[in-house]
Image 1 (cartoon, rainbow, N blue to C red):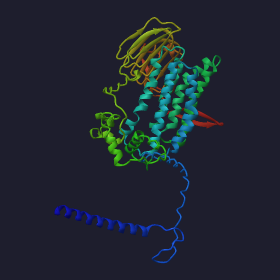
Image 2 (tube, helix red, strand yellow):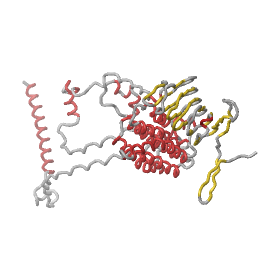
Image 3 (spheres, rainbow, N blue to C red):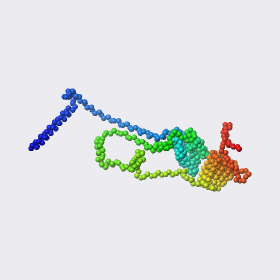
Length: 516
């Protein structure tokens, strides 16, 4: 019983202590509570003023955030300045003013083979522009580097010059293709110390086929005539351009960068990815309740649904396994499961292939003899007055032509001998070094152009022939000796040195004669 009383006394004491503590807390709170306006503090005697809480201001909608600034422009490739003046002038004077209208005119009426050749010429001018730009920015490299830079121009020239031979079946358009083929080497002025005279020589080369087209179509279709004049205008403007910017040869920049630096700059500019699009403007949103760690744990508690929107990363998209991705910092969006196919090696154009097939055939009224090599005796026996002989691309061969024919043409041959009886109109020799021509009958005219080293044997019946030469050297003519037996000749050289004087306001040109 005494133990129970002791416990009850202990409980009463604890209740009294708790009651005293609660009273102290209530007293403290009553002292700190705000008093009504005008109430007096009993401890200090001053009237207290309780501030009236301000009513909450109405909510004002915040304006949308300003759009992000536009991304900065991609910096120019290091070391590559603005377009040089010689390049912009070439664009304006030659490409925009002449080449593009010529291409459009061709596409408006010409056949597809002609359009193909014109497209090659247009590409030539694009390659030429790139080379002019490089020379205006870079210092002149060594000769080996220059030759490697000119590879595309050389290939274009060869394809265009061979187009005449690969399109002989185009009867109606062969003259147009031959006209363009003669003008194919026009871009070669970049390696000539005299670009202006070089382009002028090309203009003279195309004049033959150009005049034929004009004569044929001037009364039938003026469009063909305008087409010829448009191409000649390209050559004229090219000559004017080089006489201003490249008078004594292609001009290089002595204070420019090296070719290697230029190529690195061009490669970097071409490989740089475009800047990413700006992020969409952010919209003000009310903060979600229960954010922070609570939201994270709530997502984790979803179980397998957390990874429902993820996909498996392929090895090709892992930067630690692909150094190229680390360098570009761009990971492709998706990859194909199949291995990439190897690029197909482009086929070499027909004009750049090796040895051409030999040809010896009569096509209509024209004998075609092409790409014959080391043939000792090729004989054409059945001939007529309306037939012509066209010999092209032969080497170290001998061709015998019996009877009387209309004309004989020898082009791009080397070490080729031609024995002909009689010709009605003319014999033409063009770019055929070390040729030999013998006439056993008669011929009214022999025309020789751009040929070094040649021998002509005339018979007594052909002594009235007229021989014209242009850009030739080492041309000798063997004349039969009067009173001697047949086969005895006297060799005489065709003059190469000319002298021009002005008489009565006119230019008079004559052969320089050496005495003694």
